[in-house]
Image 1 (cartoon, helix red, strand yellow):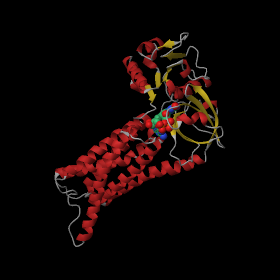
Image 2 (cartoon, protein in one colour):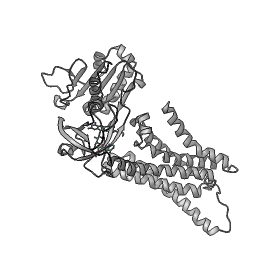
Image 3 (spheres, helix red, strand yellow):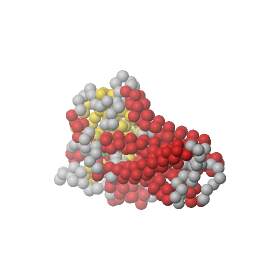
Length: 434
Ligand SMILES: Cc1cc2nc3c(=O)[nH]c(=O)nc-3n(C[C@H](O)[C@H](O)[C@H](O)COP(=O)(O)OP(=O)(O)OC[C@H]3O[C@@H](n4cnc5c(N)ncnc54)[C@H](O)[C@@H]3O)c2cc1C
């Protein structure tokens, strides 16, 4: 229902400038010029809404899930680029459709009009570079933090240029209701940046954390535990994730998403299982206890709280165990009456996280590269293994939660769907949005 509400708001925001223009915009022009203006307006509206779809707004991402939020953000960004690129070709040489009359203030009007066109041309050139830079981020020699900064600044610059272009070159923005729509939407976009980069950090500063311990969890994986520093901790559901900033200023862009691997009922401390991967994660083992940390959380929809299915299946690959560990531990701690089965796959025995009592009838450990004396399952988490672990009855009624490498998640999802598990009973978290 809330999802429907969000889709409705999104649709209304995109259609509103068209409706306001149709109602207040005066006599229509030729159909092609109208289509050109319409496409341009929708492109600009999509770009402004993209600021809210950055993944940092819980009202959105905690409703539709972070994966979906990021997929929509990426797809709509590309759609806006397409609309923006084609819209000038509909005017047939009369860009704004004659928005302003040629009068005694000719000189002023001319320079203003040129500014409007110039801003449009600048945005027209910047937008494709901006989208290409986002699509091929990993192929550019950038740190994630620098890319994120450039992405935010670039988006703000393009939005500013498009506002100037729309207000000056756009025929319909000469009407007050339409102009107010653009001012309000642009102000909203700017407000999202103020929220993410200023207000949220200021709030986080009042609720700092301290590193309590960093211990090896498995090969190249660390268990990092934080304790609240003078507050009562975090209100989260097992399986959710946090943006974590350790040892930097609260305003630093150095923050990374990590699933919370602890159980909410275990106490106010929160733990993460972090695999060495890049710049930050490779330094986790050297973090000293007592280091100050900031947590922006909770995010994500990989949770069973509030679900009504009679059983819970957890399927993890590698460090994808982190969020499912939180759920598994929470179910044990709270004596959740629902039956649970955990399948946990890794390459070698040394890659399995230690110290969490992951054994018993409800746990199936799978190694793709097992030692000779390995008593558990071997190979990959494939259809045959899923069939051995889950009966058809369980496939027909349980909720399935997946987290792991993309190929594993894709194939398990495919196998579950083949066994009749509908998409609404398969929840997943991807650690990579690209
Ligand atoms: C929802 C979610 C939950 C995650 N949970 C875990 C977990 O529990 N344990 C774990 O080991 N890993 C987890 N990850 C992956 C983890 O975030 C990355 O491995 C980590 O950020 C890499 O940072 P780095 O500085 O070491 O590497 P870098 O070399 O800086 O980055 C490598 C890649 O990691 C991603 N990344 C880096 N920083 C960010 C950021 N601020 N925001 C989004 N993506 C970023 C980018 O795709 C980047 O290209 C999770 C990722 C997501 C999206």
